[in-house]
Amino acid sequence: MGAQQREYRQRSRSVQSTKKITRAMELIAASRVVKARQRVAETTPYARAITRAASAVATHADVDHPLTTKREQPKRAGVLVITSDRGLAGAYAANVLKRSEQLRELVEDSGMEFVPYLTGRKAESYYNFRSRPYEDSWSGFSDSPTFDVAQEISERLIGEFTKGSDEGGVDEIHVVYTRFVNMVTQEVQVTRLLPLEVVEDAAPRTPENGFPLYEFEPDAAEVLDALLPRYITSRIWNALLQSAASELAARQRAMKSATDNAEELIKTYTRLANQARQAEITQEISEIVGGASALADAKK
Image (cartoon, rainbow, N blue to C red):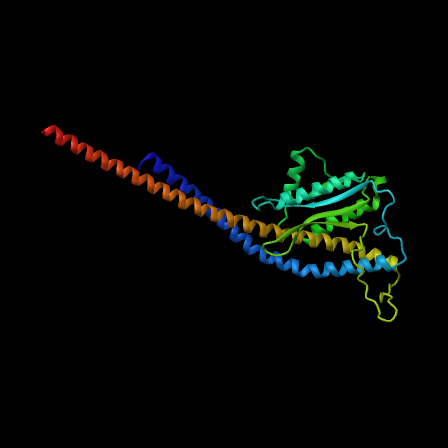
């Protein structure tokens, strides 16, 4: 076997090993994304319902609640950036970080300080590499989050918002995450969690007078006290699950693409090795013919 042929064979074996790894990762992501999609489907209706309920209370109750009242002169905006712990998922984490940088520019242009809270080692690495400070971080669960983590994050963010910027907290809370649409499409979203932003008037109304049908017991203030922490937790929980499903879908696509590319490389190296072998055989035949011709000429 010639040196060139040997080199192509070695490259082909190396790509074969890589292909086995990418194929295994593709199958793992494909199996786990099924459960992740199911968890998103189970939690999204509740997140939407509690959002409508919180919006209705905030809109139709004559109560100034700390979590629904917009600060007159906001100074600091807290942003929860949800990324992944691992790579090999295409541009998944990069897209989230890019969108968070766009939000940073908007926040700073409005005269506020950007205060990041991070989930996922990719976000931590991004900030550490650039020597940028961040307020807090959580990692180790990006593709399989738990409700306890969502509750922990929620409590921290609510505490920071309740303190306000004058006491070292924040005046707004935003979240940057990836919404799972389907296995092909995942969209980076930016949502303001606090103060509660009413995006739709979800209160049902009577056809006769147009007044909402909600009644608050014992009173609107206590309803808000009980409802808003659950609202924030459910929204963060759903955002973590949406991001987990998006990460797994992106990883499955990326690993499938890598496996397909490996197969093409193997075909290419096999063809080049065969061509190199054919060239060697041709060269050997030419040398044999040439040697035979030389011997025949010498006998004359």
